[in-house]
Image (cartoon, rainbow, N blue to C red; front, side):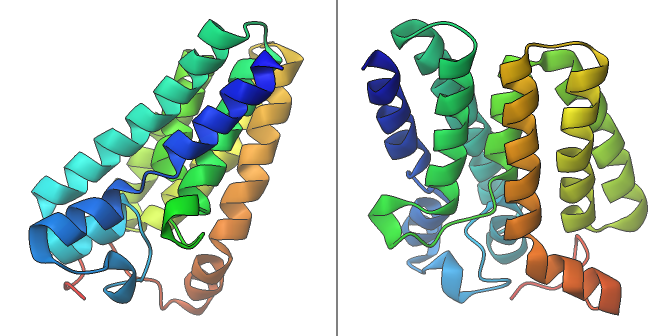
Length: 197
């Protein structure tokens, strides 16, 4: 019962879309109608600039961190924090407050996995950042991050709950980035620093 409560609270927390809220506050726009149409940090950066983009990125990470800790505080064990983290990512992707049309969950994933398994998340994150710096494709870096998380969680012998959670996160990331994958293959994907939409 406590786990269900923690998961529900985490979903509602994840559903707070800072990209939508900050875009509305700063420019009076729905971020989902501009740029790539995604309610996330990268599109906020592209449309509104570095300040709002950074704020969204950090706040979305914070959602993931807080969700995992809610699982620890309310229910404990290995599975509750993982389920709460997944619920926060699901909330970010399909927010109940915004017609279930949200972002892709990568920043929230960073918060979740850094809290659950810091070293695997750090190594995967560094590799992803290097890849983004070289290619300027945030989507490619995000996909590699998601792909490497379960690999490093498994290699470092973390709890089974963390491994299963990271595998679900990987699948979610690829599902949410399916249009980006097509664009990457066609060579039409937007690069970081591309013109504002």
